[in-house]
Length: 323
Image 1 (cartoon, one colour):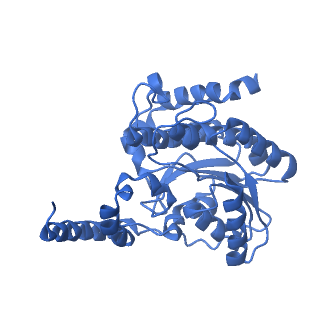
Image 2 (cartoon, helix red, strand yellow):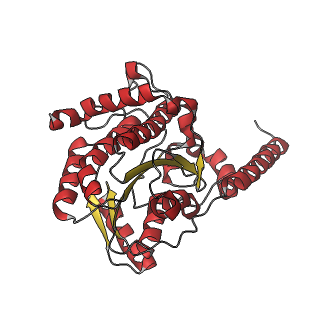
Image 3 (cartoon, one colour):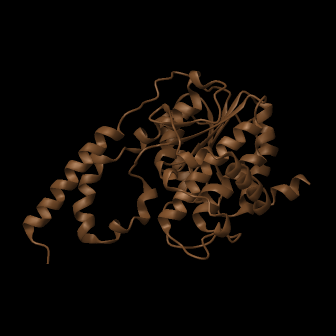
């Protein structure tokens, strides 16, 4: 049984740690006044968290915003809220389930056929440290949703992005990529699963994909960059085991605001990468707190990036489509 003084000590230490984290985590704001009239932006997972906060900002700048979300009810509810907050009626919902390659293809077909342009593709949606499960196509859920789904989506929209160049692709990664390793021998974690390891692998894949994509897009005026949004209190945290225990939850929840960014704060680097004038022509970089940062050593491995690209082409069926 934990005594009252011990509980107080734990809460006190946690509070101090979170205050330190908050002072480190709150920096970085996008100060660009750029407008996006006559521009179209696609945001995956734009119905909640930093995706929704990003959508509000870009809509306020005049962009046509397409929320690419799995849940129709949540997506349409977010559309109404974003329109109300931004004053921009050019916000629409389109169904997209990144855990289904067919859904990705259907969404890309719709955009390519019905939308005149795509100027900014913001691959924001993700899942974090979930219990083991698989996508409709048999991928481990985190690598399938966070990487393979976005890999296929991006490639299927490249022609549209090229015709609208200069255009931008932004991939939301995480500092967790520093702990990541691409396990080519068990990419779907079938031989052994750790939720943190699988998440870190998927976030490293985001950075490697971005760097390889940037190389392949040289000379097209389409740029690709990745970013770490910071520690943000959003629905992405729903699988954290600490939240499953009511006792710990009652202690931790009141302290969350001290150390974590709000969704609006967490969206700043995404917004920066999408609109800031200083990034015109900048590609293959990694950002955090609205500044370029250095990736983990393994994220600079060109051989791994190429191998991951070829594997992703094969597993998503993209190579067959091109053949």
